Amino acid sequence: MRVQTASAPITRTRPEVSRAWLLAAAATFAIAWGGNEFTPLLVMYRQADGFSAITVDVLLFAYVLGIVPALLIGGPLSDRLGRRPLMLPAPPLAAAGSLLLALGTSSAPLLIAGRVLSGIALGLAMAVGGSWIKELSSEPWGDGRGGVRRAAMSLTAGFGAGAGVAGALAQWAPWPGVLPYAVNIVGSLAAGAALIAAPETRPSRADERPLRADLAIPSAGHRRFWFVVAPLAPWVFGAAASAYAVMPALMADHVSRAPVAFSALLCVVTLGCGFVVQSLGRRIDTPDGVRAVVVALALLVAGMCLAAWAATRLSVWTALPAAALLGCGYGMALVAGLQQVQRIARPDDLAGLTAVFYGISYLGFGIPVVLALGSQALPTLLTYPAMFGVGAVAAALCLAVVIAGHRTHRPALPAPVTSL
Image 1: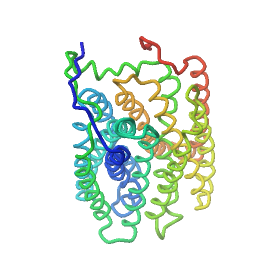
Image 2: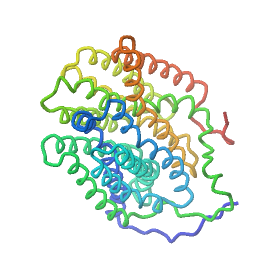
Image 3: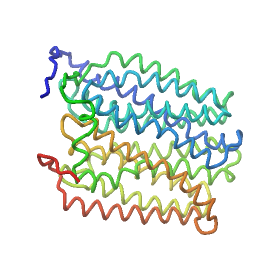
C-alpha cells in the first residue's frame, strides 16, 4: 500500500509560474552541451592525437555506458524519491566529465572516463530533467503548454550549441583540447546553482514496496510501446550519429583547411534542423494516431538515401543537405517518440518509461562503430554508400512495423497493462 507524504500547498505569482520550467531547462541545456561538445572534436582526436577511426567511434559510444544505467535507474527513482534529489547532482557530474576530457587529450582511459561521467549526467537530464520540465510546464507551476516540446528542444539546443562552440574553439582558439571543455564546466556549475531554486513537482513517497518494484516500469510492457515506439527509437540518435559522426570522417580529406570546424558545422546543421522540426512536431502529431512517427521514419528513409549519395560524391554541397535531412528525421523522431511515451505511461512511471525510450534510442550511437568495423572488414563490399542504403531499407521496414502496430494496438492504455 502506498502512502504519499503530505506536501505544503504551493502558492506562486503568475510570473514565477510562467518561468519555473526554465530552471530545469537551463540545466538540461548545459548538460546536453557537455554531452555533445566531444562530437566535433572526433576529427581532431583522429588527426592530431593519432587515435584510429574505430577507437574514436568507441570513444563516442562510451558515454552510452553512463547514459543507459542513469536513464533506467534515475528515471524510476525520481518517480519514487522526487525530481530534485536525482537532478541536482547532474550538472556537477557534467562538469566533472568535462574536466576529465580536458585532462585526457591524449589518454583514451581518461577520455572514456570523462565520457561515461558526461553520459551519467545526460541520462539523468533526459529522464529526470525531461519529466521535471514537463511537470513545471503544467499547473500549478506553468501554463500547461508545450512540456514535451520544451524538454526535447532544451536537449537539442544544448547538443547543437555545445557542438558548434566546441568545434569553433578547437579549430581557431588556443588550447583546442582544453578550452572547449572549460566553457562547459563554467556553464554547468552556473546552471546547477540556479537549479537549486526549482520547485519540487513530485514529493518523495513512503512506500512499502521494494525498490526493484519501481524499477520494473509497468508501462514498458505495453504492446504499443514495443510495436510503435521501439521501432522508431534507435533512429533518433542513429540519424544524428550518421550525420555528425560518420559524415565528418568521410569528408575530412575534402575539407582539410578546417576539418574540425566543418565537423562542427555538420553538427549545427543537423541539430538546428532538428530543433526547427521539433517546434512543428506538435502540429503534425495527432493524439490518437501515428502521423508524427510516420513522418519521422519517412524523413529518415529519405535522409539515409541522401546520405548514401553524399558518401559517393563526398562534396560539401551533398554532405550539408544530407545532414539537414537526417537532422529533420532526428528532430521529428525525438518529439514523436516522447509524445507517444507520454500517452502510454501511467502517472507514476512517466520518468521510467521516458528512460526506457531514451535507452533504446541511444543504441543508435553504435552505428558509427558498426559502419567502421564493416568498412574495415569488407572494404569492397561494405562501402559507406552501400551501408547507408541498407539503413534506408531498414528504416522503411520499421515504418511498416509502426503502421501495422498502430492498427493492432490502439493508443488507449488498458488496465491492467498487457505484457509481452
